[in-house]
Every structure is written in C-alpha cells, then in structure tokens.
Length: 517
Ligand code: MSP
Image 1 (tube, rainbow, N blue to C red):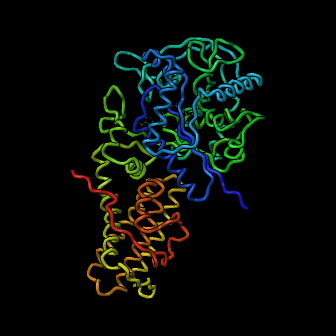
Image 2: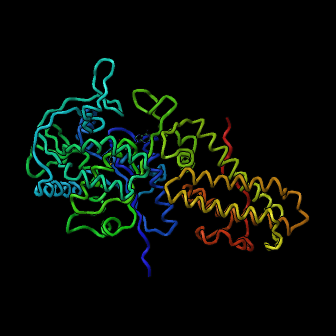
Image 3: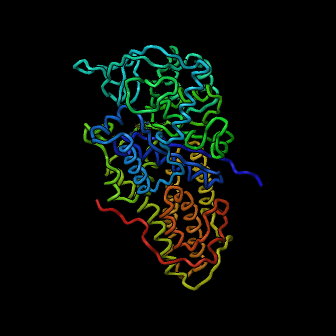
C-alpha cells in the first residue's frame, strides 16, 4: 500500500508570562486549519503547539506571584491547554521547554556545537530587551523622548548587558543561509525574504550570543555551570526534541514527520520570522539535520487603537468573546477576513458583521431555505434528479462552481486561506442568486423541476460543507445529520448529483441565528 504523505505543522511555542490573547489564537487557528485541511487531502498529519518556559521574563513573573518558576509554568501550561480546549484547537503534541527530554537533548546540542568549535566563549556588551528576549544591534535601537532606548518593533525598554557569553559562529553560515533563502523558497513571501536579506544579511550576519550568565531560569550547559542557554536556542529546538529527536536515538515520530517527512511548516508572527528563517535553519544545518519546508509568516492582529498591549488596555480577551460567539465561528472569522500578509484590525462589530453576512445570511439562509422547501414538498415522495432537465444557465452555474472549487484548493494549497474562504462564500452567494431567480416556491406543482433545483442546491451545500467542516467540524455534524449523511464528506463525490436521490432529509434547524445589532 502506498504510504500517505506527511504534514507536520507547528505554532510558535507561546511565552507563559501572560495569558493567551486573540493574536495567539490567530497563529494557532492558521496551524489548526492547515492540519485539518491536509488531513482531508489524505496526508498523515501532526500538529504541535506549546509553551516556551525559560528566560528572565518568566522568572520575574513567577517571583512577582511568589511562586517558584517551575510551579508557575506548570500552572500556566495547564491554563494554555485548557484555553486550546475551549477553542477546539486539538493539537497532537503540547511541547514544553521544561520537559526533561527536551532539556537533556538541548544540552547535548550545545556540547555538539562546542566540540565542533561552532560555539566559542567571549565577552558581550549590548542592549537587550527582556520582554522580547532579544539583543538589538546599535543601528536598530529607537530612543523615546526621554532618551530611553527601545526595541525597534515592540518598543519595549532595553537594558545594557555586559557579560561573558558563548557565541554561535553565524558568520560561517552566511553564504549558505543566503543561498538557502534564495533557492529553497522556504519563506512564505518574497517581500519577507527580501526584508530579511536587507536587514540582517546584506551587511553581514552577526554572531549570536547563545548563553547568559546573569539569567536565573533556563537550561544550564554541561561545560560551565555559570551559563544558561539563550531562550531562542532552547526554544527553536522544541520543534524536534518534543517529537523525539535525540541524535542516534531518535523516535519514530521524529523520523516519520521530520527526517523522512514530506512537508514541515512553521506558522510564525512577523516579529519572530528572523529567528525562524535565519538562525533556525543555520542551527539545523550545523547539526546536519534537515530544514523545514515552509515558514509561514503572518501579520499582527491590532485593534482600532493599534497593536494590543496591556498598557494601552486594548487587549481582546478571547474568553470573553466566547460569551458572544462559538469558537468555530471566531476561528472562521479570523481565517476568512484576515490576510496573512497584513496587520489586521479586530473589533467586535467586524466579527458580528462577518457572522451575519457570511454565516447567518449567506450560508445559513441558503441551507435553511433549501431544507424547508424539501420539508414542505418531498415528504415520502420520490422523484429522482434528472440531468436532462438542466438548463443552459444551470450548466453554467455548475461550471462556475467547479472553477471556484479549483480556486479554493489552489488558494489553500498556497496558504492564502482568507482568499479560499472568501471564494467559498462566493459559492453561497451564487446559489442564493440562483434560488432568487428560479423561485422554487412557485414550482410546487412541478415536482420534477422542483426536485432538480433542490437537488442541485443540496449537492452544492455538500461542497460548501466539505470546506466549512475544515474550520467548523462541530457545526457540520449538525448539518450532516439534517442532510442524512453518515459518512465523511468526500471531494470525489462533489459532482455526483445522484447522492441525494434516496436520502431522507431531516427537519430544518437554524444553524446560525442572526445577531441583533
Ligand atoms: N516564545 C516565542 C516563540 C518561540 S517559537 C520557537 C514567542 N512567544 S510569544 O508568546 O511572544 O508570541 C508567540 C506568537 O504570537 C508569535 O508568532 C507572535 O507573532 C504572535 N503574536 C503575538 N501577538 C500578536 C498579535 N497581536 N497578532 C498576531 N500575532 C501575534 O515569541
């Protein structure tokens, strides 16, 4: 039997120093969508998310709460897992950087680099952002009106760090990484790739400080007990250690999904793209293991007041949002309305408008009017779908929908998720127009015609159901029950119009109740 292809997708592992917000949910929804989509395409899939539990920021947060860091991250990790459950983000691996196995392997990786002289001891003096866990080079530092040095993107304050540190010899890989980014097309957009080249490679890649001796919470290196491993070196390796990488003793999951796997996709926000596109492939190359196939970079979710931040008081609490909408509706909104390429502004009004326009009016109304007409006209009457009755207009409609289906697949395959869903709702629009024009409620005495129209509609609701199920698996259980479908939706059956001939359609139910303004 032919082995199915594999697809491994990851979210960034989130810092447990605060609660998860809608921006994190956006990252996770993209990865979760890709997992579901690829599994419907027959791939064997693996989905990892988790928490990034070391570093000064976490240490300070734990102290503030009068907790030991481990106690603090244990509680936060539980909260994260619970959050993903509430949002129906069903991951396969919850990856934590405080896992014993991870810590052991990261230590080994550091020793491997040291033995091969890829890492060397030196002195570091520079400006560091604890909140971003990142050093900022002098040319990128911003100053506020009081002269305080700030991180160029997050605007968090910087502190001067002067200490002994081990450095990773990035320069050795300068040429290689340049070619890697050019040739392998791993970065999701050319614009992002060019920005990385211009900002970090064109004037030479700087060596990276990979240990700290002033930080109190992290993985100690074996060779020098004063040094802890820099959070990014620690964190990036989670993608392989927590699926079983361990040099010669790697586990089957790692071998199947990474070493011999087909597609490996990291979903990341734009500010951490540099770590994933430059340092991560270099670390892997240095270790002699394969690189990911795609790094999918996305913009931020902002509010009309700008990027969400605690100080601005504009953080949208996703748990509150669940009081108004179902988790699937929220994920569908984020994936349909927000393009990966841009920053996107979130508001409750926008969410409500999306819901009413696309879910309640477009798809919901189409479903409801179709099912109620079937309920009214076809109880215990069997009239079969007759292809000969199709008019030119109806044949054109079928062609149009076939083209839309091709486009949707193409968009999804190329990670243009928003465009794919928008195309899907165009199908709903086409069908509602078809209903308005053909006025089936006037055809109650011409059952053959009526059956043809309703049958076409049911068949296209099936098509929409297939794609909606990727993001709304629970809602589609309700829909399938009413349609009398017991098996999985199958793409191969999209245009087999006989599939509803013998089905008993259930009673109409409103899938999406319109929200009042
Ligand atoms: N721990 C690191 C990632 C290590 S991965 C090996 C980290 N954590 S984070 O919690 O700060 O951010 C995680 C992800 O959430 C990033 O991809 C980031 O871009 C994303 N987002 C955080 N705020 C966001 C928005 N407002 N909007 C969209 N995504 C944002 O970085």
